[in-house]
Length: 351
Image (cartoon, rainbow, N blue to C red; front, top):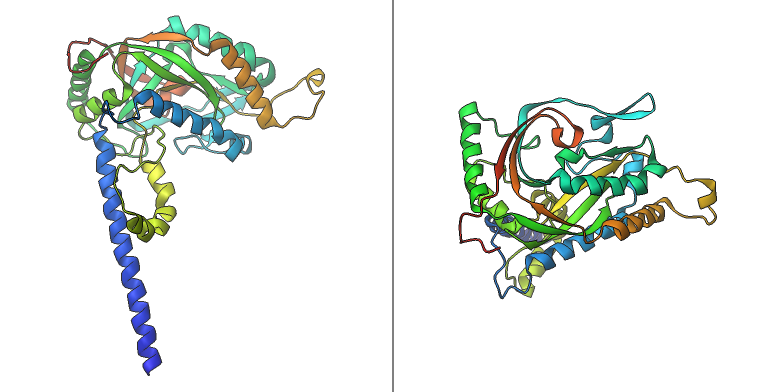
């Protein structure tokens, strides 16, 4: 009987520890989420300016291909949890987008890149990749090069709105556009993701930082989903003692992947150039030495970076886009676009 009581007492103690740890973890998670939603700009003494944050993030993204492999070759999913077969099909030996009506339409706020800059980038991408991926590559429409900033509604967390409510959102976004300054940007690097996307990753030379733009859009769109799509490297802005970290450490490891999904990186500035959907066709004369496909992708990206690394551009428009088809901006689907010039009318945001 004494053994039974001792065993019950031990189980109760363990259960209390786990329940307490779970409550503590959830409290910390909520604190981190609130902190992430505020999107505070880094202060002068933070030691982590936007440029450095972006470089660290891009370094991590660059390693993903080696760590995860080319998962798109096995079908895989997009960064928005859609399978490749959901968005592309092959007809008569060529790729065609699968356009599906978005119900309700996605409402995205993006910075637009003019064709003055997107066309030469696309030409460089085609010159390097098209000889090896003919019929298995989808190039982003040069008139729709964009940098995703913020979603008022998306397909994973839809926020239905009436026409009047959408018009009010557009007015709020227009006010943000008038307050922020045009961005002069430079292409830091091109990376190739495990999901098969060629991404241009940019740094800001002058103008309003993306972190500040997203903070303003968050304030302007209070009903927007808390979960946004831009990738985030996990970082909890909390001061934890070592003993406290030990207590929640196991739970942190168990839930860290969930946190990565729910958070997004407010400093990121990237645009998609193209998406690969199949294996490369490597001419025999270039197969003198055995080479893995991952290394081949790396070699092509290195070649592309040698051409367009350091490319400078100016961004002067903020678009509020109603995507009437799923991924309409990426797949040349139906859209309704509200275009706003960046006005730089406030002195609160320093270029």
